[in-house]
Picture 1: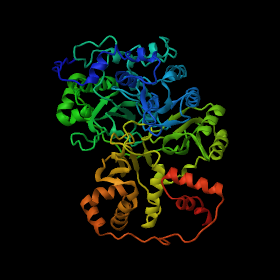
Picture 2: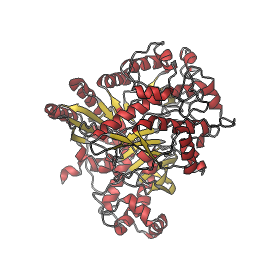
Picture 3: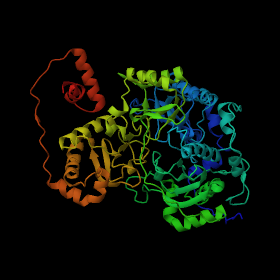
Picture 4: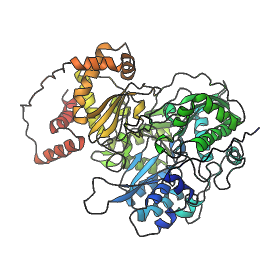
Length: 634
């Protein structure tokens, strides 16, 4: 039985809704403006361009008063489960040098981004990507974003194979069907034809959940106005929270029987990170347990959830347009009731799961079919050649020599798949010679930390994130050592604005950009990413990091339970008690503190290098020198 609900009453909508409706299914004004000899798109063009996977930006470090802004485009890929075949990676690497800013960036949604693409080169860039088995369609905009899955390419664990398969299928189900993408970027040629699962094709065209009983002939899922805001999905396996399952609009958890055969999926819905400072109606939210769905019904249930948000999500005030706000307004029972009406049947109860664990898959692992996979650490996701760290050279050499595919991870690293055991030594040698730290030697704060790009390219950033994160983590490590927590670690995340791209609201220690050089401090998330952090302090200036964090770490050391993590401690101990402790805390005087009296002469060349490094890290030359040589003298 298919339920056909009453169409929602007409409501006041935002200007962007009109732009979407008039776009001729994402054609205009992009198609027209692309042919114009200009350096940038209009506001309407910018909004529709997002659906094609691109944001218009400008480098805020290079703005000159009185001159036109240095416009360029950021391109983001759509690659479900982070999968990047070798030919596509080599194309991306080529494009980054030919048209971009000589870097790639691994995102927290398992995709690569390209920065610095000029408008005049945009069509050639997109054409190269598409012809290399890539796509950017739906990587941005008001529709389903890149679908996530655990990056581990296990071949002997059926649930992982199923998670990868269904991530691809859900991505296909929710991909825009408009021909505009290929019309604009390939002049109508569909260069790469991928074969979709017949069940996905049938589900997309079925009438289940449709408001008026039949799907739209061009966009059977989205209709003429697409979604109210972005929509994020993930597929994972019980216990593996590498995908931050509770931050997604919809997460499917694979449920198998004792023989590894698929039975169905647990469904979590209503998560989301974005919020706005000083707007209490906006908030981060973790997803709710919706229930369990049989494998044969999973596509219809996903559609029912999508259609509920499509038809009832807020379309005027975009700040509160995500599905989490719809569930918050309605309450979970009403939301489930509406989904069930569209689904055509009752949703079964949520099945019990093992405890979640946050995984990053760095280092070497058995793949389960006689081959290996290796997780490679990429600091803050930035693939580039800088100083002794040449991860861009390393990744290219490995792909070229061994023809390996990779998976981008949700923690901004990469995993090389299907490695022949006899190639392990050679691959490790390439990583070593290009300065890529062996995973066991990566500082654990850095290993479990994440940052968004922020300045200088993100137009929403109010302060630094990626560029300052390494120095901030270094200062935190020194503080931990100072108070006697030498080997302590926790999940630290930083964003340059409150939109939460690096998911700071799930961190044990989160920094959220609030003003230039200042952050809102969030504490109390869980190590396995299942509990929201809470705001502890506003406008913490980065210069005051030691002053504000030392009392917290000292209190943690004195009052923690055995084995208790920092996030769990902050959640248990209460913020009121933390503030009370901080008010009377006397900072520990570091051994040798005070003015440095010992002097060591260095060459002019080394002095220049120290000065540049200190400026880049936001610290002193003495600190850079101590960090560089301190361990070598032990």
